[in-house]
Image (cartoon, rainbow, N blue to C red; front, side, top):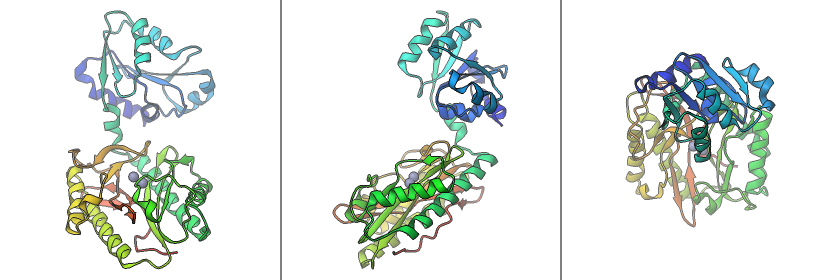
Amino acid sequence: MSRERRAKALEQFAEKNLDAFLVTSLHNIRYLSGFTGSNGALLLFPSGEAVLFTDPRYTLQAGQQTDCKVKIAKGPMTGIIGRFLAKRRPLKLGIEGDHMTVTRQQALNKTLPAVTEIIPFSGSIEKLRMVKDASEIAIIRKAVNANAQALENALKRWKPRMSEAEFASEIDHQNRKLGAEAPAFDTIVAAGPRAALPHAHPGLTNTGGGMILIDMGAFHDGYASDMTRMVYAGTPPAKYKKIYKAVLEAELAGIDAVRAGVTAVSVDKAVRAVLTKHGLEDKFTHSTGHGLGLEIHEPPRLGKKDKTKLVPGMAITIEPGVYIEGWGGIRIEDVVLVTERGCEVLTPLTKELRTV
Ligand code: ZN
Ligand code: ZN
């Protein structure tokens, strides 16, 4: 699997006549080599040779996880990579412009022959990662299902006196019990008017009366899930019901607009058209969704600008929200898988208005 991915990565650089490409993003290293350690760098050569550099903590792990050659660096890694490369007298070295620090590049410059041209690339591996293969889809499916189950389990333990923070940690606990490695982001539980903050940090506010916005996700085998659901503690008033219905209509319109060949921006437009109809467009202050995979936020971005065409195998979120200062906010978020003719909604939970 990793070998095929590396071949695809190199295809992108074929015209540039690179002598080597240095991967420094840990997510991209994992994608291309299977190695999951917290320190590493990966050198790809047009011949197909691939060399993973890491430190002595990972000698055993790297040997088990990757089919690449492994070099253990017992000192500063950049110097060792530089010296390894220098022996091959490269003329053109590609680097990940988004992930290489100035310090590391300066260290490389010192070790490489003066003739070496260093060419930064942006988003090359991330572009490959947008379209998931069958093994990745299977893991994402598992992660999304477990995340939904974790919410159900946490809701059974919810009590009217629970604070946002308590309920958020109950959610994290339930996700862990279902095999999650870690939360995919800080779990959001926002009660009442605090739900107007799209990325609220759970605090000591009580969740016992009114709306509760819950945005949660967790990593399974390295892949993220992401879901937002609303629960109302008590009897929801008419305004809540009305806005909930509008957001749900917008979310369903987004899901309806997803299919292979359409642009990311067109899905965002479909969502905004519904909110405009309800006079809520200016209350929707973020983009409609994002890709997810080894990272919680990956390209494409389903916003006002991204013209990326959707391709079968992309896993994306659809998550419109309406935020009203002093009142609260409503967001509904699912993960969907792009298919030839539409999409498959992976999130298994109901979106019927829910109360506790
Ligand atoms: Zn999201
Ligand atoms: Zn989310």
